[in-house]
Image: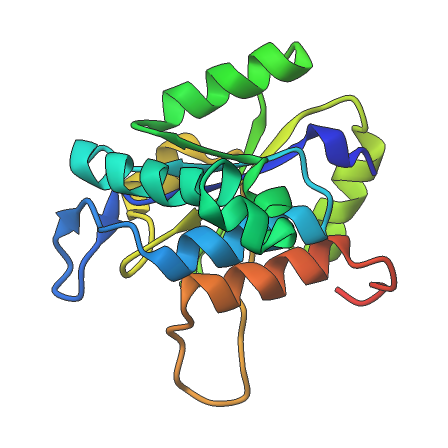
Length: 194
C-alpha cells in the first residue's frame, strides 16, 4: 500500500447537529491532537482540518503553531512530529487541490459514517482497492458533530465505508475513537479480518 498517497481530513461542515440541522461544528483541541497522532502513527501523507469558520481556523492554527514552533515544540517532540502533517483550511476544495499538487492527481474520496446505507464498502474491499490502485491518491473523510450530511455523502464520496458496529444498540462514537478504529482496520500491519 502506498501510504504517501493516503490523506485524511476532519470535516466540520456540512454536518448535522443533534436536532438534524446542517451546521458548521467547532474545532476541538482533542480532535486536533488525536487525529494528528493517528495520521503520524499510520504513516499517512497528511491531515487536513476543514472548517469554514474563520475564527475557529485561526484558533486551530495558533494551537498547532504552539506545538510546531512555540514552547510546545521543545516540550514534546512527538506532538511536533504529528502536527508537521497537519493543515487547517476553509473548504474541501482546498484539500483536493493540495493533494493534486502533491501527488499529481485528484484523490478518491472515502467517506465515513455511523449510519448504514446501501452500497457501502467493507474494510477489506477498500484495502484491496488501495493495493490494486497503488498510484491513486486517497482522502479519508471523517465528520464531526452528528456526522456528515446525507447529501454530502451522496454527492461527494467515491466510496462510503461501512459503519463501526458494536455489540450494543448505542452508536455514537467520538470522531477520535471512530477514526482510530477505522484507520486500524484499514492500515494496521497485522490486519487480516474485514
